[in-house]
Image 1 (tube, rainbow, N blue to C red):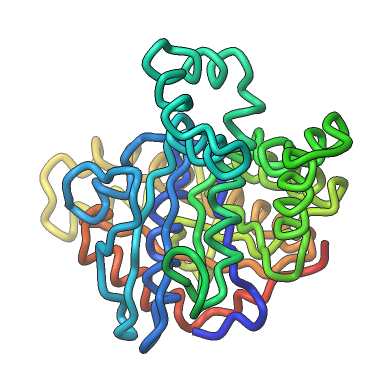
Image 2: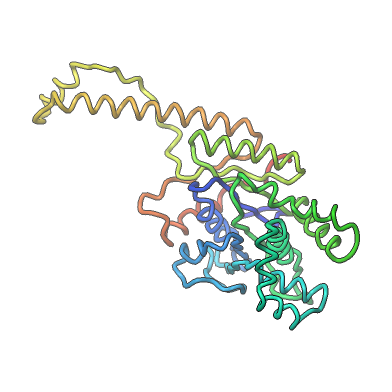
Length: 324
């Protein structure tokens, strides 16, 4: 799977669209032969651990899988309190004093009353992993980082919070850190992918998120339509009443054919309406000017085998992104 220049893949989507599943499958797909990918969770739900059928993940980079191409997938669940301790040590050398703040609840208080601070810490930790460049640096270097990000309703604000912080803190380490994070997030190294379903509300939220990303000069990547049925299905008009259907069912030897005809026609009309809705939603997504990829519904659920199946499908797609 080739994604020229892109090192950070941010995956967002409305709740229920399967964004965590897509993020995990993308991380696997990016783990080509000899390549190393970091999959990062920032919402604290332990969704990655559930998908990979492993124990709860700590605030540490841990190898959790081998990609279809033979590369390695590591995972990290970012904890805002721990990230703040890292931050205090990195810039202010507080060390034990920082741990004392945690014991008295000061750190938890700060991250609770200032949700913007939490977002700063989460994005900062992810971008720190992106900036690692192989030999001689601190920590393990990765060829790609995949972030399972917050939902589309707040993705632009989540990614843009450091811009606000840089404006508030005009000088000092906080200002420089915020600027460094925004340089990564607004660069060609980053792509924000949006996961949706072929339904009106998720598609509308996707369109709104694309507009917000572009307004904030954040790089929109691709749209992933998850749990899609084949686009080749044809919507055939179904009548309200068809005497011939009952006769055909009777000839086929079905008992109670007269009672079956009505429900079958109703189901047919609903199917036709659904196909028409999906066709309209595909047209809406095509109008966004971004690559649109479709993944099938996993009829047996998103278990580990299904995750690898999706990863193999994603390996063959173009993830180079679209216009900002």
